[in-house]
Image (tube, rainbow, N blue to C red):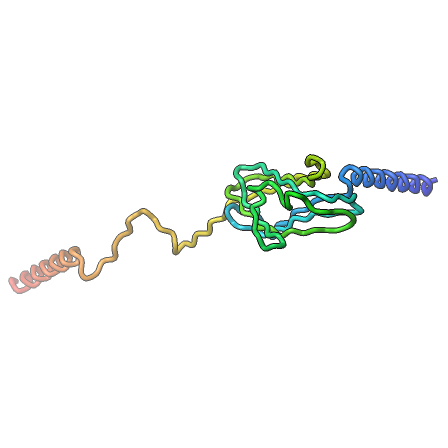
Length: 199
C-alpha cells in the first residue's frame, strides 16, 4: 500500500513538472536570458559581465533584437562590442542588435561580453526583452534582473591619515626650563659652599 502511494505521488510530481515546463516553454517560445557578473559589483568600478540569450528548442524568428530597460538611482554604462569591433552603450541606445533584427531559433546560447559601470550605489533592475522587429516589436520573452551595487570600501592606512590637529613640534637644543633649573641648582650649591666657608 505504501509503495503504491509513493509511486502515485512520484507520477503526480512528474506530470506537474512536465506541465509547468511545457507551459513556460510555450509562454516564452523556448527563450530565456542570463546575466553573470565577475565578482561583486561596486559603484564607479567597471565590471565584466556576460549577457546570454538562451534557446531551448526555441521557435524560429527571422528578425529579433533585445530591448534593454533600466531602473535605478542612475543610468549605468553597458558597453558591448559587435562583430565589426564597434562598441555601443546599450543602456543609452536601449537595444542590442541591428535595427533590422537577427535570426534566432533552435537550441543555442549566445553570450555577449559587456562592461558595466554603475555610477551610484543602490538597487538596479535591468529588464531584457526579446522582441520581434517584424511584428511591431511584439515581446517574445522578458526577464528582470536585480543587481545590488555596493559603495566602494575605502581602505585608509594609519600612516596615511591626515589629521587637522596641530601636533607638537619636536624640540631641538636646550629648553628654557633647563637653563632655569641649572641656574637654581648653581645658586643652591653656591649658597651651600658659602655657608660652609663662613663657619
